Length: 194
Ligand SMILES: [Fe+2]
Image (cartoon, rainbow, N blue to C red; front, side):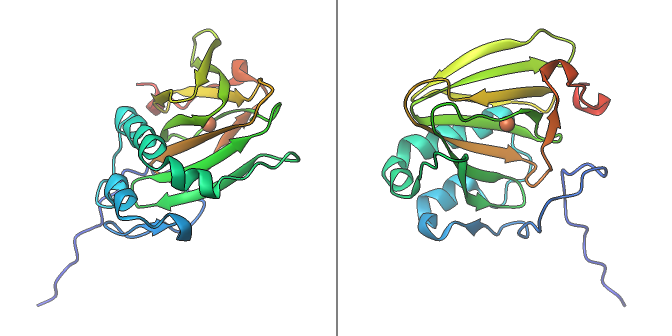
């Protein structure tokens, strides 16, 4: 008698091709300087489908509870934006980004993923737009966190005169970022706005 293995559950949509291999459900690939029991608890390796609120809670908790560890690894690169991957599971990826004054992203979305970010230090300006809506602007300061769904594009910039750093999470992980000429050109796929 042959035994058929159950298919591994996945939240990934068929049109999305991941940018790298993801860990098996229940496993976590951690930054070597950040392989801490608390982070392994927070990143929940057996949790696949993170909501925007859960992602925001994750990045809020990481910035507030692991501040010292984050400050030990963060770097500022005046030439280009700096980032480090803190952790990756089958359900979520977690990043630490830094922003020297004037550094920022082009307009983009996260390829159908939900996301969040929380400010570790400094502040960030976020211009964002839901499909069909106006472009809005929000300033995120130290301690602020935000979670967002797939039907939203944004552009993040450090417009201040001091350095900034932030912790970001995305679920599903490893979906390629999609760039736009500007936020007005953002048109999410229909399945992402229903
Ligand atoms: Fe983003």
